[in-house]
Image 1 (cartoon, rainbow, N blue to C red):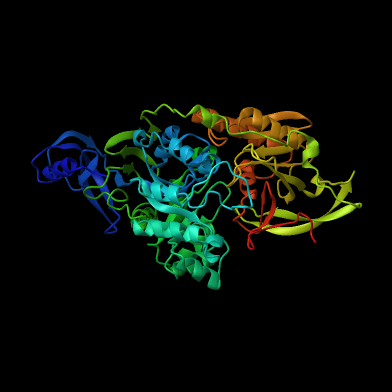
Image 2: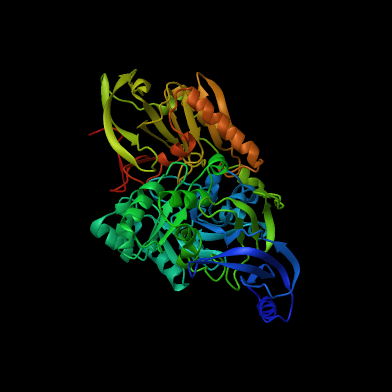
Length: 584
């Protein structure tokens, strides 16, 4: 990560044999190692910190810190960049004003669509960005072999290759079924990471007791799926770190941190992640800064919250020699803030260069350049006609499984209900908030359509759909009638990916995501405006969810309980098996 000549330049500057490139005077240094705050002057050479106490060093440029607090840039410990909808080149203007300078990304989304070539394409500009991207190498592409259709895959050889990249810091999240069933391919991926001195990220959703112990024995170092304090403590007690998550639909921070404060729980093995968060919410609510500030409101000290956002994360991922503190040799990623009770960066430095001034991004955005084939990944063999969505049944009514959404969480509850059978097919019941749910295979391979039912969208008429559907990323659509569902699928194929809302045969809103059906290179402001418009149209149709397109993207996930839906059908997550949509 640093050349011999760069190391020597740092040493010379530290000895006073060469001037600093930059010195930031008059700051209160937040030392996350000692837990103290001390007056200082931060010296920088070659984009790295020489010392936070550089008052007597010569410098080519001197900046007045105006008495502000200086703290390290924030770290998001687990994120799927694809879920921001925005290409990495444009994320700087969203993340940096919020103080996030490090993203630890598991790009399983684009890998499930386009395999290793897509993985490589997403990060072609990684060295040109004004923030760091480190890779959590996707461990499960596909997530549920034999239970879903994907466009690409990463085998053991692919994963082993990517793990050797200098940006790779861990093996990405591995769900329990792969470990508890002792499947060789995945355990060998764990060993490949551990041999390189890299950790393995967990995904221990819903696991307790002996299963949790066995999962920890599988070599997993952490979990970002905890939904309450009791789950978090059970992980900590087994030596697993907890990545406290606060995304668009996964609101886990309050229940976990309230318990931490009430019980005085040791916080060194706690850190923050967003996992999946849409750009409108990053702009309006915040990013890791929101989590830090909310933690302080709940009773953590500012130092504890800052440590969770910085050094705790850096040490856990073994990158503390690069980021996470204002210490010699680390990258000069620095936030200057007026107040530690509510952190809002005035200035942000990335590698010693000012990229945020007065809370506004002032850097230069690289030009996105992606291969043409990545814009052509949606091919439907079925799903263009309403009849494709029929779930046939005999009699006047049928008893079916219903995926019942859990507010503010990624998990769902398995329920069942009796629905009318009309003209030989099971009908949704929007009056009781039970919509038809379908997953349409979009990789041009087999034309599969899985059909079930979902409760919790509140939609009174029409349908909504997304080509982001974790982790297979087929088209997922929920609706009150088959024809509107078919129009959703057809519109997504025409856009080559995105979100769409339809009612009475008319498209009421859409947001195109043509890069792998996941991302767009449109300006961030346009993406946010489009997202706000389609969300409002959904609410105008009676929809009740705050982030409907984030919610729908997770219903098809076959690794989060109780139920998931893929193009092959309904999945019982705990048994990891296909089940009938009918209660039998």
